[in-house]
Length: 418
Ligand SMILES: *Cc1c(COP(=O)(O)O)cnc(C)c1O
Image 1 (cartoon, rainbow, N blue to C red):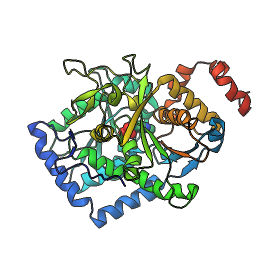
Image 2: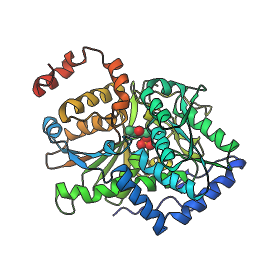
Image 3: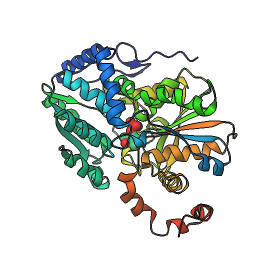
Image 4: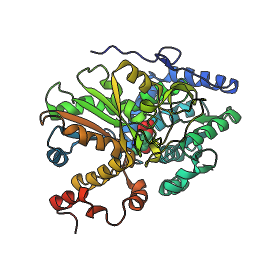
């Protein structure tokens, strides 16, 4: 068993994490830490959280054996944890419910959130509608454009979506703007952060609300593999890192299970156009914590790129930086094109349309499976569904996608393309 007890009392994961925030937010963060400490193990809070997950989200989400895909790869068995089947279509809702429950108990009627792909915004708007809370979502103007179905969804649910025009007009800029709003309205406002980033207690709190994913897998996987057996590898995409921490965390003590996070390699890890903070970044402070970030020699955040808005972030949760340093988790990259190919492959082979974010994890699992034996297994966190991405995919793939040499085998074997 791998010994692991993080963060410490001040929110540090080794040399990462902590709390770097302005004077104005110090009080709000203390208040939040106290509230979380009070309710975290409160039986009534825990029971309500579990009831919400069961009846509103639809948990537990199933694990599915992708038998046809596994056979075609000719190696390890690939299993998918179906977070895409959650209400609102991704893992984000797990965390949002936990934080909204805290907001109600703390008497904060106004909720703000940042969003990239829009899934966190949709989840937040959904809970605010149900709990009767005001909801303001900050979203980079670029993301507003590429994820327009989710923008409309948030508006249907009664949220105000604020396009952010500064910087690269993506997720990092939305986070900056949400932080600014929080500073200005700290008395009546709760900031629901969508990933395992931000100042302490956010990284640990968001992980705790998401770890239900891995906890369910611990009982679901032996049903496939036999008593006491767990997968040889767990694979998840990493943007800020919340779906990955959610499935990794319960597996950390299981040393025989490799933990592999997949970052967006964009146009290639050496192209300068990617979002691979753990593989190409260095230690620095961003959005209230010390972690690995993409920065130039003057400490300026550099531009990031990914086909998927949800992975397009120049930082990463501090716990991932620490797991990488400890050697307990390993991080790899998948390019835009590899993710796009995996997206199409999963559609045609298993009848599942994955989010472009999740397609990065699927793509890596497909490569990894080929290097393993048929009696070994890989568990992939399918973090979300791809409905929001079909416009992007249609634009990028082109009408002749299935005529390409790399795709021809797929159409013939499946007999699906007519
Ligand atoms: C937001 C999102 C991600 C990336 O965020 P993490 O915090 O890294 O999980 C991945 N997949 C989907 C479907 C998302 O909506």
